[in-house]
Amino acid sequence: MSLEWQIALRYLTSKRRSGVISVIGLIAIGGVFVGVAALVIVMSVMSGLQRDLRDKILTNTPHLIVQKYNSEPLTEYRDVLEEIAATPGVEGAAPFIYTEGIIGHGRGRNEGAVIRGVDPDLESQVADTKNQILSGRYELRQAPDEPYPKVVVGYLLADRLGAFPGDTLTLTTPEVAAVSPLYGTVPKLQKFILAGTFKSGLFEYDSKFVYASLESMQQYLQSGDIAYGVAARVADIWQASDVGERVVDQLEGPFYVTTWIELNQPLFAALKLEKRAMFIILVLIVLVAAFNIISTLTMIVMDKTKEIGILRSMGLEGRSVRRVFVYQGALIGVVGTGLGTVVGLVAAFLLARYRFISLPGDVYFIDTLPVEVEPLGVALIVGASLLISLVATWYPASQAARMAPVDAIRYE
View 1 (cartoon, one colour):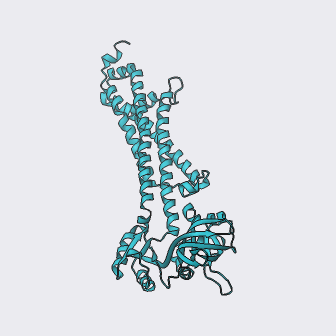
View 2 (view 1 turned 60 degrees about the vertical axis):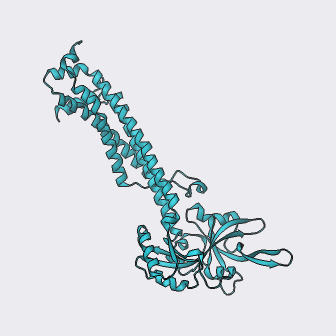
View 3 (view 1 turned 135 degrees about the vertical axis):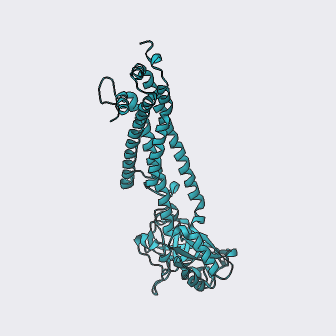
């Protein structure tokens, strides 16, 4: 160990108890420790939030939605379906009908709902609803001996309606009307049998979505054999835009494609902005810790003025004195950063494993706090903390290096 390191370690320890870090040094290390731990935890939570929201949204949201301009229905949707499925990069495709309405059960129990008519055989290629069944079963086809078609609804919607698998639900949409001799034009009612409930983990889906068969919705809407669009899933979600362009080029007619990124752009843009803002705010905490290092080293320089003067008079060069305080600041930064990183990673692991923090789903879309540790992000935090700690040593180290031996010991 070099002489500079030995002096740096001696200056950082307590005068009364050798080998024990002084209170001033502990305060400086604590500042770096708190800043780094907070950065690791918060950035892991923000990354986990982005990942969890993306994964849950994509389980029920198609990667691509192909429609005609002016919302024209697809009368030739089977041909369009085959062409989309044959496009390189597409893993599956399925037609759909999408509408909104009111679904009711019993007296006075009515809830707004989003109704999606899908092909039961093809829908599993673009969404994972079949694997999210909580009660009952994923069955949308109407059996010959059953009076009504079937639906699958989100478990929160079923809970609000007080409905269980096997119960009869009533659907009303503003698109379809019937003529009554007493009341004139009134919305047409359609009864469905609740086949099952699903849980996606997203409040928006679990509290509003209703899945019915494409055939039953065609009959209810009296639309004939049409689809409103075709949903598709791609092999690489980050290449959805490129695959969408190939789909449009392959199709003939006024078609356009909407990707999952475009559908959820405001949400992910807000999360990205919030993540950057939190990073900047927490970096300020590390900067505050840097000022602690500056003040700590400055106080040590003032306290060790006589010792520095003696060392200089014995032949220790100014650059060696500078190294003493640079090493001391680096040691504070390394210890504080190391402890903060370890504690932050342990806290992130505990949050991810035990999920002891719950969230209101109607506000945050999710019911637990997700965590994902990004190695690159942790490396960036560690590097930034060490760099700031080293930069913080420049002023007090320079002051100590410029100290003349005569001035240091003049009044001693």
